[in-house]
Length: 441
Image 1 (cartoon, rainbow, N blue to C red):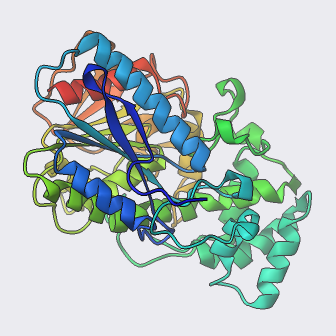
Image 2 (cartoon, one colour; image 1 turned 30 degrees about the vertical axis):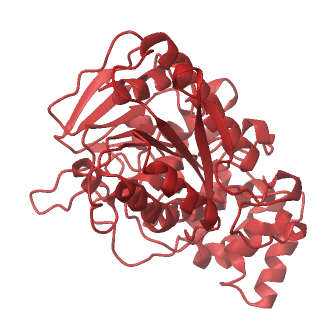
């Protein structure tokens, strides 16, 4: 298959024209694996008035990522045509979607086309990509063989799950860069905590690629809870492997965002002095774009806007410093966007209200999202909204033609119970309208 150089495709643009849509790939370490297309994107950004940078979340293969991006763009174009056509200013958009390795198990048939600058992939080993990524650098041959043996079984006992947890816990070591004071040394998850997590996470079968899209699959009917989701004495190792990737993908999203996507973002901002750059991230994609914006030195100029759609990050990632307490890990992002940062949260997001706080932590923490005196350090931003910050204004979600008023605060939290019915329900008229309001500002 010929490599793609330049845009992956074109999409509908203003005045009946088209706009280029790039897909830029990054490896697990955040290294751009499609440098030729990235160079083409930076050239195109010099002539753009608006650059849109999208990042998908966990469990998006190539087909799911491109499909979800396209759906959101279609919704945006419908809002644009109805509410801002012709536009009130010069508008020449360029769009770029990040594709990062976020799936737990990738079949060879799920791989996308090779993009210019990428090395040849070993597609034959694709089905075991996660296992190798998790374990190869952390286990000896005997340990790896035992993990493969357990992972290939239809189910395993709790004692075998404990053995598996002991083996893979070192591979999941990391630190919590989102929570206040969470940038300390890496910590290794407790194996017994991992087993309790595995028993609490949903045991549903792997969703079809078309249903992929975020932190974990939405529960059927929104009713599944940790108390009813687990298997008490037998566990499906496939679901265990997926559950174990919560911490892995959390770290990977931060690495990809803080390394390669950050470099790309700085390049886009440096390509022109007056283009408006808009960041949009869903689920762990919120962590990708926040890491790109907040980590390291500030870019040469601010981005125009940031829209987080059901972000799978800590609700305290923007926490105020004071009284001896450190600031939230992503608080620098608030000063690096011209408009107030906008983030959605919904009580209908079962993964982020019921499950996220079980998994996305290193140290021992209460297993409830709501605890005495407030929320857990690991309660999700997309489930509960920003916490421990005076920089936030909370509003109900709006639909066209009602415009959002920009608050005096640096953070606009959009209570989205009426417009977001689940974790993956983010390609809809209300979310597209939120982005268009930022673009029209």
